Length: 475
Image (cartoon, rainbow, N blue to C red):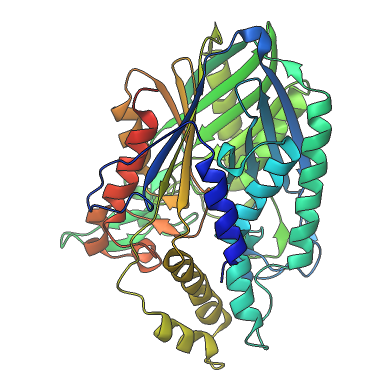
């Protein structure tokens, strides 16, 4: 369960905002459960500074991967990193960070935000931490870990000592980066289509139900034959400059970022490798990669799970990154707005805590059938304690960068862009992963894997959509 002290810390941090207002949702909620917070500063460009940081978060040999139900670490093909930046001079510092982990959930996500906030001398509500969602990587839920550990016979979900070491590294990296911050004067944005990577994972049959899931890879010729379906084909880039010098570039694309996994070999996979290759070619600019609303998006149409396919996917992402940078339009920074939105999701009535605990305690079940329910129970207990999810956004001039939770379906990203069609909207999902999947309401009766592990009720659609709209209103 999430410690009560964390909840008090969160509420106290959320209270320290400039303006607070409630927003309408599909179901009326008490104002204590659904609040909007906004902190806006219009700054002269000369007052702004940016500090970039990066640190290693590669798990050691033997550490669980993807929640402990695939092969643990036997070796490292390429390291995992946490990369981010601190924006200074727009009120209290703003911290944005991307992790090469499968996920950070519930109190684990809050602890990362708290620790990075302490390092930057700011508050957790001004920190966004998003995961890229590679699978040969840690899937960190300290609350599920406590449930699993209490069984006495299950392997760890995450090693708490390793988790704490990463927080120490993060604190040190952020504090050191601020000492060498640089002026930031301009922002630029661009986009480019990604060729032959993403496809919708959910193939719907004539009966309106999910007929097949294409997944991240597939050797099924039919999966390769079906069209891409609903995706966002564009990779977007937002870059901070000091005059003519690019300082920090953030790249956004919505797709499950796995070519293959489950072999125990740690890897940032094709999206992380592409980011690293771009970094090597451009060492004076810090490059970050954010996974958009890719809950129902994967590479299975174009990926057969081979090593050759990983190389091809990497090249396609890198080509789009370079293409998006080539299309960028640079402009002086004139205004900055940071907004947050707290929502307390409705729980999916299909799940019952006592029934889930029965599955967890059943020693004849496979590991996945015991570990996975622990994630559901952890989220249910978190909601019962009224610890909300925090959505956040950074708006600079006509650019909006949204930070959303968990595995949102692509529809949320497309809705956000349509809602603010006069703005350049870049979405980073996979923030607080507590809810697991967040399908759209009409996806629930269609069934399929994502719905089977969606801990929120269908009403989450209206609540999340309202939250996104509040972040974009008056940006």
